[in-house]
Length: 163
Image 1 (cartoon, rainbow, N blue to C red):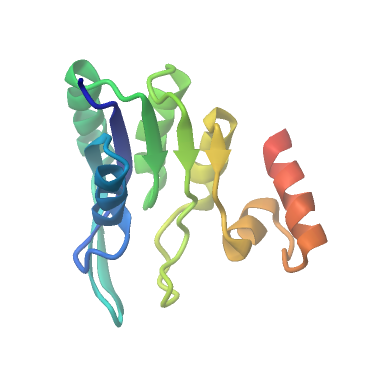
Image 2 (image 1 turned 135 degrees about the vertical axis):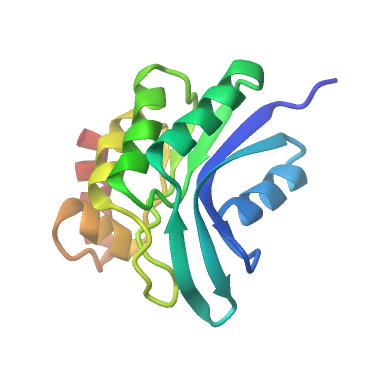
């Protein structure tokens, strides 16, 4: 029996606790075949992110083209979209219907506060998402107002779902 293919489109975490490395661990635990497109390479460890090296948009596009041509996913998940150019490369594939069952994890900053993602790139991708998983800070950035209470969370979810 051939396992389903799931695609992670995210940053590479040299510490292994987030990004593509974490996604691939989860995919393996769920017994699906994980593939990946690297959107950025980070220099990080358990104490924080020391640097971020975004991939050029054409590199992200080429990675996507290569995988989609040979290993089409049953589902896809985004993480860090470090530049508008990277976001546009991913958006083009979502618009074309090539990223089914899309989960958008709007990674905007690291747990240590380092800026990692671009709000606009994530906002344009949300209409193509089956599920979005923002935390409170990410939801606040996406809706443009502070999200802190359960009522705020419900309101933000409704606003994000409405597009």
